[in-house]
Length: 291
Picture 1: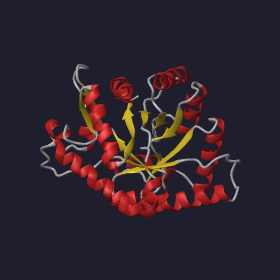
Picture 2: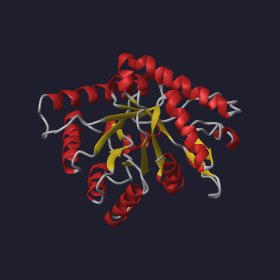
Picture 3: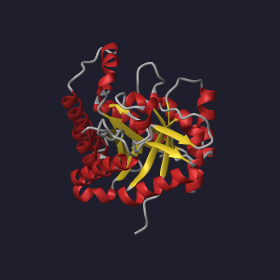
Picture 4: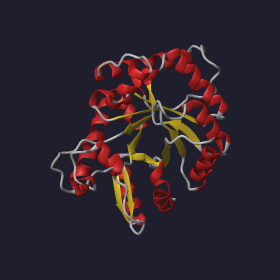
């Protein structure tokens, strides 16, 4: 069986001018990235017009969201924006969505929106995905020429179960590890357990699902000090040495990291990787090794 191809996405968040966004998109495409992803937070750029600008500047680059906050939207209005963006990007749009993290509470308050419990936010995500699917199937939105791929990102059990039910790509935003983690083998074992959880939750769908992993740090040998700030933000209880044991923190030569990703693909079916824009150039060396 031919292995699923690798796909590499870079996430952009900082506001910028139209010219700067176009330059970012072209740079990502030239470096071999598959997609450029934009965030969905108050204080940042509105994701839908930004994606259209990115697509207009490129020929092959897909554009998407990592990820839309379901609680910010009503399903019918979101479906309209999704369908319109897909049309305006010539079918290069990838619909990434999540339930909304705990740290987004101030954004909900600023928007005048209630901030439900985590369980309620995940249930709303499930309802949103179901309603949008029904709207597309019944032709109540702008015409969609294809089935728009859905990416659901998160880390908790309930959210991953929703992702396994609805998503084309289940993006593991993080992998829980023991607070005393002291080896890379332990990190890889945690990844293996998480993928097995997805397999069990997806059942027969698993063969159709693309498994993704958020890269929280890239340390390519010879490229200076590694930026582990994102890994530390999501894992504040871990030391720098422990952060390097996480499966989403990649370090070594470009060839060694490429070998790590081949192992993740062959052993655990992980083929989709998203990296922060601060790691754009460093990770491009790994893409070159793999291609």
